[in-house]
Length: 313
Image (tube, rainbow, N blue to C red; front, side):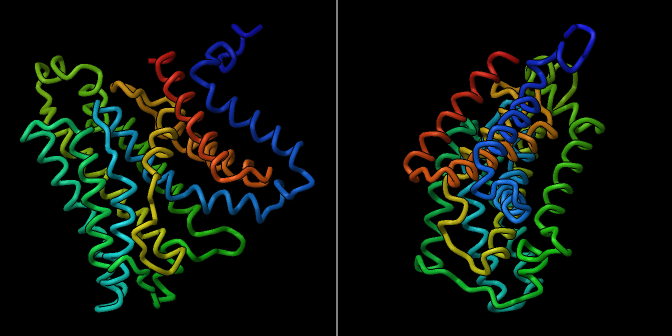
């Protein structure tokens, strides 16, 4: 029977979609009396997941190329501060430019250290995680920096078109763009080839160092965009925003079918993986679990993600 239905025959490749449906159904039944299916709650899941999804799309490229970026959450936090400070001095446009510049600058530095100096991206981005957080704390004096621009806040995270949050459009645009680039462009094919076998890719004429440099820049730029969305939604810049997001971002990408060992990635699966993590976090909160218990559950998700990656790699 399963052989006649491709979706079931390839159940392992489709485990993320099956798991999402099963978890949603379980929560819909067990948490019905706590408002899980309430449209407001479902839209809140989107709001809470959008920034993770945007960063996870970029992380798909990084992991698929055989690298990793642990600084992505800290860069998002740093960006919220630089954006808020720039808006306070010169207005919303300056804030947007400052946010993008922050992401590009960090990405170029990460890429340069990794591809030119030869420091593994794990160590490069681990160090950058501390640097970015430290800089954000230093320039903000550890205080929240308010954003008093309604237009910026509406466009970057705080607005809605009717009942639909603007954050949903940001997530869909990131997913569509990422899917197109990874599956329909020569750059996406070179990313997968680099992660699948760097030596073979180099002999085939691919500049693997350039590919890795670019994906690290893409990752930090996506982190900056996520930081701009955090800042707009919460109308402030705070160094704490984005803290710990790197774990959820990596888990979302790996749960969605991206291999931790490179050479394989799917953006659509990554988006579903991010939504699944948001779904689980929301369900755990509605169940009344303490924050410590939620952290344990999140760690279990990451372990599951690694196990599934090894099975499908």
